Length: 115
Image (cartoon, rainbow, N blue to C red; front, side, top):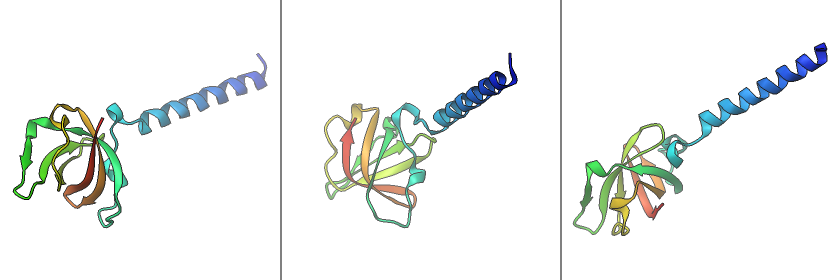
Protein backbone atom coordinates (compact mmCIF):
# COMPACT_ATOMS: atom_id res chain seq x y z
CA UNK A 1 0.00 0.00 0.00
CA UNK A 2 1.33 3.40 -0.90
CA UNK A 3 1.75 6.22 1.56
CA UNK A 4 -0.98 8.25 -0.19
CA UNK A 5 -3.56 5.45 0.18
CA UNK A 6 -2.71 5.02 3.89
CA UNK A 7 -3.10 8.77 4.41
CA UNK A 8 -6.47 8.76 2.62
CA UNK A 9 -7.71 5.89 4.79
CA UNK A 10 -6.57 7.66 7.98
CA UNK A 11 -8.34 10.88 6.90
CA UNK A 12 -11.56 8.99 6.13
CA UNK A 13 -11.45 7.20 9.50
CA UNK A 14 -10.80 10.49 11.34
CA UNK A 15 -13.67 12.21 9.52
CA UNK A 16 -15.98 9.31 10.37
CA UNK A 17 -14.96 9.40 14.05
CA UNK A 18 -15.45 13.17 14.12
CA UNK A 19 -18.93 12.81 12.63
CA UNK A 20 -19.77 10.02 15.05
CA UNK A 21 -18.65 12.10 18.04
CA UNK A 22 -20.62 15.11 16.83
CA UNK A 23 -23.74 13.01 16.30
CA UNK A 24 -23.58 11.41 19.73
CA UNK A 25 -22.94 14.72 21.49
CA UNK A 26 -25.62 16.76 19.71
CA UNK A 27 -28.32 14.13 19.19
CA UNK A 28 -31.22 14.70 21.57
CA UNK A 29 -32.06 12.01 24.10
CA UNK A 30 -35.40 10.50 23.13
CA UNK A 31 -36.18 13.57 21.01
CA UNK A 32 -35.91 16.00 23.90
CA UNK A 33 -33.93 19.22 24.00
CA UNK A 34 -32.00 21.20 26.61
CA UNK A 35 -32.95 24.21 28.73
CA UNK A 36 -29.38 25.48 28.21
CA UNK A 37 -30.50 27.18 24.96
CA UNK A 38 -32.65 29.59 27.00
CA UNK A 39 -31.45 32.89 28.41
CA UNK A 40 -33.09 33.35 31.85
CA UNK A 41 -32.88 37.13 31.36
CA UNK A 42 -34.94 37.04 28.17
CA UNK A 43 -38.71 36.90 27.84
CA UNK A 44 -38.55 35.83 24.19
CA UNK A 45 -40.63 32.71 23.64
CA UNK A 46 -38.88 29.65 22.22
CA UNK A 47 -39.95 26.05 21.77
CA UNK A 48 -38.47 23.09 23.61
CA UNK A 49 -39.39 19.42 23.60
CA UNK A 50 -39.12 17.85 27.05
CA UNK A 51 -40.13 14.74 28.98
CA UNK A 52 -43.16 15.03 31.27
CA UNK A 53 -42.52 13.83 34.84
CA UNK A 54 -45.95 12.38 35.59
CA UNK A 55 -44.80 11.02 38.98
CA UNK A 56 -44.66 14.58 40.36
CA UNK A 57 -48.27 15.20 39.38
CA UNK A 58 -50.23 18.10 37.95
CA UNK A 59 -51.61 20.96 40.04
CA UNK A 60 -54.54 23.14 39.03
CA UNK A 61 -54.42 26.74 40.24
CA UNK A 62 -57.49 28.71 41.27
CA UNK A 63 -57.05 31.15 38.39
CA UNK A 64 -57.50 28.40 35.80
CA UNK A 65 -53.85 27.63 35.17
CA UNK A 66 -51.75 24.62 36.05
CA UNK A 67 -48.25 23.56 37.07
CA UNK A 68 -46.35 20.36 36.38
CA UNK A 69 -42.75 19.18 36.04
CA UNK A 70 -40.60 18.30 33.04
CA UNK A 71 -37.07 17.03 32.38
CA UNK A 72 -34.75 18.01 29.52
CA UNK A 73 -32.20 15.81 27.73
CA UNK A 74 -29.52 16.71 30.30
CA UNK A 75 -31.72 15.55 33.18
CA UNK A 76 -32.48 19.10 34.37
CA UNK A 77 -35.93 19.22 35.96
CA UNK A 78 -38.05 22.39 35.81
CA UNK A 79 -41.47 23.32 37.08
CA UNK A 80 -43.75 24.53 34.27
CA UNK A 81 -46.44 27.14 34.86
CA UNK A 82 -49.27 27.45 32.37
CA UNK A 83 -52.03 30.08 32.58
CA UNK A 84 -54.57 28.09 30.57
CA UNK A 85 -56.29 24.72 30.90
CA UNK A 86 -53.96 21.79 30.22
CA UNK A 87 -54.47 20.15 26.83
CA UNK A 88 -56.25 16.78 26.85
CA UNK A 89 -53.88 13.83 26.91
CA UNK A 90 -50.96 15.58 28.59
CA UNK A 91 -51.13 13.24 31.59
CA UNK A 92 -50.64 10.25 29.26
CA UNK A 93 -47.95 11.88 27.12
CA UNK A 94 -44.28 10.99 27.47
CA UNK A 95 -43.03 14.21 25.83
CA UNK A 96 -44.48 17.64 25.11
CA UNK A 97 -43.33 20.68 23.18
CA UNK A 98 -43.52 23.90 25.17
CA UNK A 99 -43.53 27.44 23.81
CA UNK A 100 -42.41 29.92 26.43
CA UNK A 101 -39.48 31.32 28.34
CA UNK A 102 -37.34 30.50 31.34
CA UNK A 103 -37.91 32.40 34.60
CA UNK A 104 -34.97 31.33 36.74
CA UNK A 105 -36.12 28.14 38.47
CA UNK A 106 -39.31 27.59 36.43
CA UNK A 107 -40.52 27.69 32.82
CA UNK A 108 -43.52 29.85 31.89
CA UNK A 109 -45.34 28.18 28.99
CA UNK A 110 -47.64 30.18 26.73
CA UNK A 111 -48.56 27.09 24.65
CA UNK A 112 -48.28 23.33 25.13
CA UNK A 113 -48.29 20.86 22.24
CA UNK A 114 -48.72 17.12 22.81
CA UNK A 115 -46.14 15.05 20.89
